[in-house]
Image (tube, rainbow, N blue to C red; front, side, top):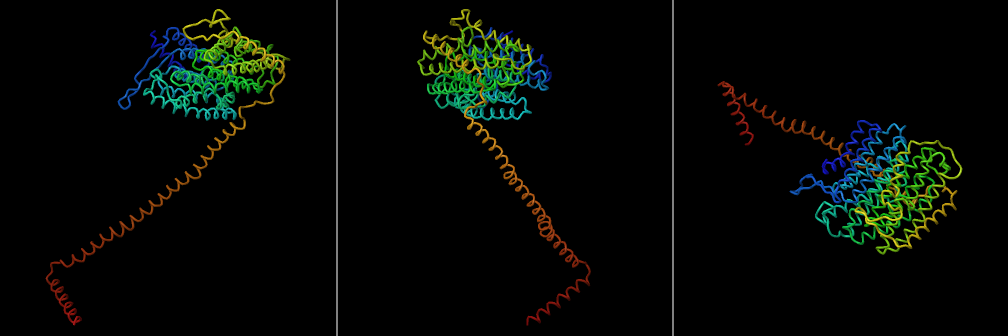
Length: 593
């Protein structure tokens, strides 16, 4: 099979799968199609070049030919592999998790559409197609967040995600258009040089909203109203990964001002997300703020292979954490930490998974997270960003703190009520293996250079700092092991809910203004037009046709009839008219005198 044909198969298979699942909504059929897609991705990655490109004629505009061009460079290929792995595990997990849901066919349809949109976004080289795929990713996330649309909270969360992301999408749209006009090309690979800072910041603002970074971060925790497996896909390989990927795409063509903007926003989000993860009593909301925090770390290291590497490892262990959380929720039928405890006995697979994935989140040795976090530290040290190293150290303490405490509250302590379940073992086990060091380096204590990702080595003193962050975080978790927050604290709770309510009020006000004023005004104008039309028709019938046109015709006809009597062809009649006329003439002459 040719590489071009294999590439088209990878690009089109999710869309074809969505159509087939819409026709035959069976979980096993959908999972089989996902497996075929994953194998196709593996085959493409094994046979592809480092910088694969392909283009097709799309349309002509103003004498200029516009191509549908695609570009599978190293970042796109790595994230594509992540999408294939996570989407397959999510589909496999969902079969048992949603087995009793009557709308499971619709759910699998959304998953295939989501994967297809993300695949298109990763592989396209065209700005036009990129933005279309970007919006499709957002639309699919809206559909999955509001999947249980009978729940008011799910509808509200989907609306919130949609509205907040619109802010970033508008900025991205203007940024991409300006980028194309600046470089006089609509293909990313053909852009060379540095774009103005304002263009770069506009594009990055779109990425920040998509990856839920400060200050557009409040939609992601609310998005937990969707099914837990869908949350794994959103947080690991699609929605939020798309936000980071746009930064990867444009990093080389943006200047230092844009890079500084990335670093500052990323550092704030890294710490803010970790802090708010401490104050959640909902298992999924803790992981949501954890995602915000880890994505901030990627923005801090943006421009390096280390950031891309962490996107890859984070996608694996965060997807695993969400699936393990789903197994826990399925066991206790609750998302609240108050209803959990001692579940290592009821859900041993979930306990092992949480232990391994949590170790990856903390960056412990023998996990992929250890290599990627330390590589980011090496990049920050090499590039001279000492202040960001301090932020990284503080964030690592907080990360170790909240994930260790959550593990204790869920799996340690006295056993609470729950039903044992083992049907989730296979997809979780696949991610456990993928999150370990085996596929990264043979030596668990050292990672060597490879053709895909450059490794940034760290100074020896940083290892002591890293070890100290683990100790401090775990010690803090042990001291506060029995503390469960009273509620789920959100970022700027007085601001974002108020903003969301303001947007809803504005929408309702616009509707009232449109229906009560604009519609009535338009309807009144229409009614006035009808009245004027009736008056015009009456005037036309009775005045114009009846009096003016009809009257003149009657007058002419009467005059004609009278005059026609004079032409009788009788001599005596003519003599009578002459005598009468002569008599009238005499009378006139007499009266004049």
